[in-house]
Image 1 (cartoon, one colour):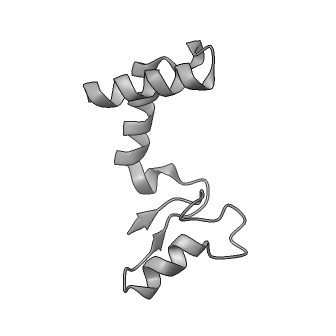
Image 2 (cartoon, rainbow, N blue to C red; image 1 turned 120 degrees about the vertical axis):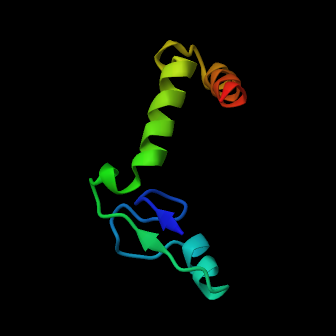
Length: 78
């Protein structure tokens, strides 16, 4: 499984392996961590996140619940 360096599967500091990643390793799922600050290694996901943010117009969200509603709508559209 390819993952970035953010929680819950990655660790930004890379000092400890997160619990969820340890569990996946224990059930024989290989973890492939991207290098820090290299979004090119996971371009498909990065592009999807960019598209979702644009479609949801997240900068216009007035609250967390409004942001969630916007994201849910964008994901349903995708």
